[in-house]
Image 1 (spheres, rainbow, N blue to C red):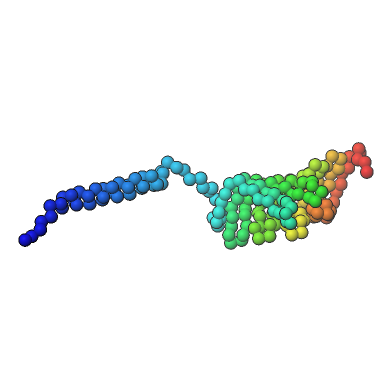
Image 2 (image 1 turned 30 degrees about the vertical axis):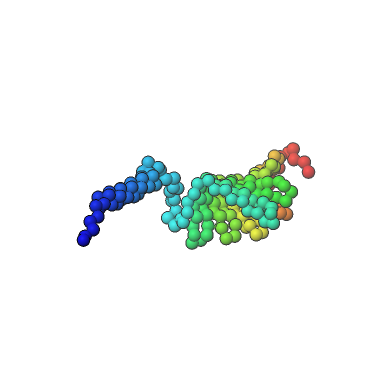
Length: 193
């Protein structure tokens, strides 16, 4: 005697229903997580062909022993992995001194060495505090010595005096300024010692 199963239609229906549900689930997941063609990616176009990373609006702060030494802002930056440097545009650096005063540095462009935290700036360089304003075309900051220096002509102006020289060095912690080469001074008649 042979046994005949009469439920193959039911088994085929369950199998077909399972395949349809699985396929529907895969399609639903794809539709939900597919990339949206209308979303615009905000990538910074780099004019530096060797840039590893390009970003807008940079902010960085250097600290030592828990105290802020300087804070840097730039409108954009391009990081070069080969030289470990960040090329910056529209640079602003605020230096914090021991007596709680601040000196602000502004420049068109600059370079931050990520290894040493040294900074080089150029183009319409202005260094100012509450009393004086220094102008030059190039200025360097040596982080481990906390020294600013320029090998290009500088002009310093204050309320009643102006100084000019071919080069300068300024020790931030000691507040010691050294001018060299063709130093010239103009003092207003109201100047008092």
